[in-house]
Length: 189
Image (cartoon, rainbow, N blue to C red):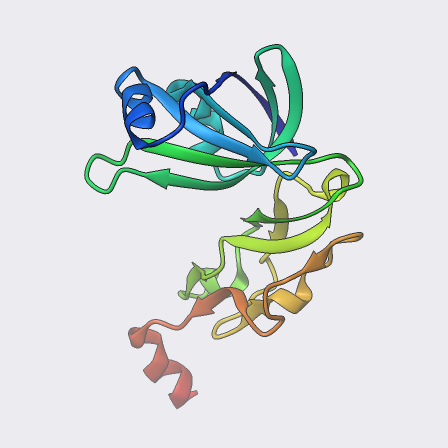
């Protein structure tokens, strides 16, 4: 996993009013759980950009009032109107701790079916996995070069050592659809 650093401060006052005041100052309230203690904190909103607006899995080096933690983003909440980040949940991890998270899927290569006039469609963009934090990659590379017209690659074709894939094996990850113009010519031949 890639690493990003966030420096935050322990929250003295909890509750909605205190959280709204923090947000007005450009801060994002959050909670760190999964360790020995649950820690309520806040940090500047701009520090969360690389973590939120990415297609890759990140490990967070979180420093709260001088104490360091290692965590992953578990949940995020946005304002319903202006889409500003309003709250984050971070899960504290250790290299051996078993965690459940999402890994982005990146397609590589040009599908044979796409060269024949089909359209490559990626239906699953993130893969839900469970395993030790040290075994979780930045992303899953999936080669679609041999994918023909009307064919699909399913979750069961993905192999990740030391990880358990939680998505259904029958779910398609990528497929090549046949355009309407080609359907008639393929049936005639």
